[in-house]
Length: 228
Image (cartoon, rainbow, N blue to C red; front, side, top):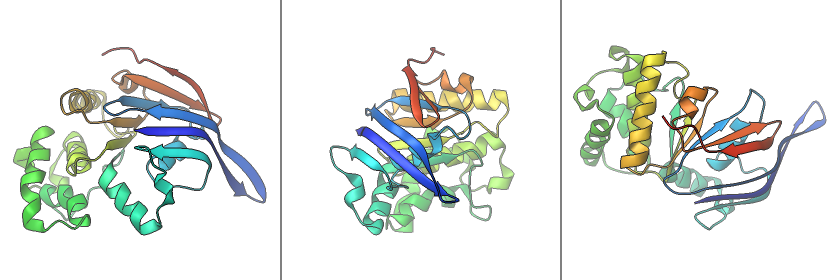
C-alpha cells in the first residue's frame, strides 16, 4: 500500500541545511500493525507527516496504492488525506462543546456527507470501540481512556486506508494504556485496520507486528515485535 524509496528531506534553519530524513526506503502493506520508534529529533514525526500526505517537500519516491499521491494539488491532496487517513493523537483533540456523536461525525461531514446520514456510521464506530452508550456525552464527562476511544472511533468512522496513531497512550495511565492497545490490536486483527503508531513506549510497541526504529533520520532497524 505504501512504498517509499530513497526519501531525503532537508530543513533550512539559520541558513543551515539540515538533513532530516536520509535515504529512507520503507514498505507498509495493508492490514499491518507497525510501530515507529525513536528518540525526540530522530525524524519519526517528519516521516509520519510525509506518509500521511501532510508534507510533500522531499526528494525520492513515495507511492500510495501504486500512484504518486503528491502529484495532486493541495485541495485534492487534502481530500485524499481525509478519505485515506484516520488520525489519533496523544491529547485526543476532541471539541469540548460537541457531543461524542458530533465529534466522531466530523470526518464524514468534512467529506460532504449529510448530517442525518452520519449517525448509523458513527454509532457503528462507537460500538466497535465499546462506548456506544456514551454517544450523547460531552468529552469532559468521560475519562481519559473513554476520550481516546472517541478519538479512535473518529479515526475509523470513514473506513480509511490506514490509521496514524501518534503517541496514543502518552496521556494515559498504564492500565488504560493496556486497554487502548488491546483495542488497537483487536481492530487490526478483526476489522483488518492498518495501523501505523508512533510511540516511545516499548510496552505499546510490543502489541505491533513490526517495529521500525528511526535514529538521526535513518531507519536503524526493522524487526518483529515481541508478541503480547
